[in-house]
Image (cartoon, rainbow, N blue to C red; front, side, top):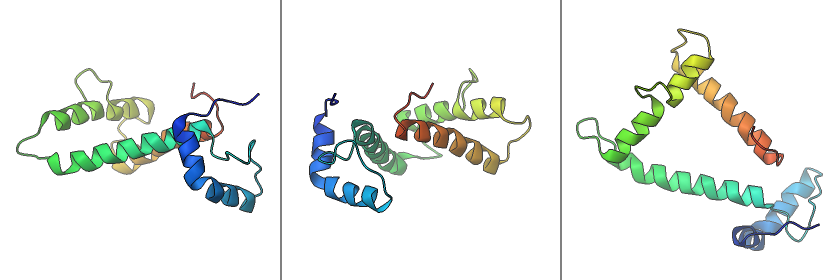
Length: 127
């Protein structure tokens, strides 16, 4: 049974399918459908990465210590907030107490993102 390919997947396969097929062949991986070697979940991941990159490129020049804008305040609230559910708060809660060293936070965040990315690349649910 074939899965329904969305428009982005069809477009990416039209533009980069031959390249993806060459890379997969080089590592001895056979895609399910050689006409469409890029699956939907990879196309969706590419879209999320591109949207995130555009958002952060847009946000970067607007960050100011003296005059923080609304978007900057929202992003800071996502990092840490009074309710204790920000990203840094969750990392503090789930790694060793007193581990405020930034390298440990980066390592923990990388491990969490790596786990989620690995599950997504395998086409499995994150939870």
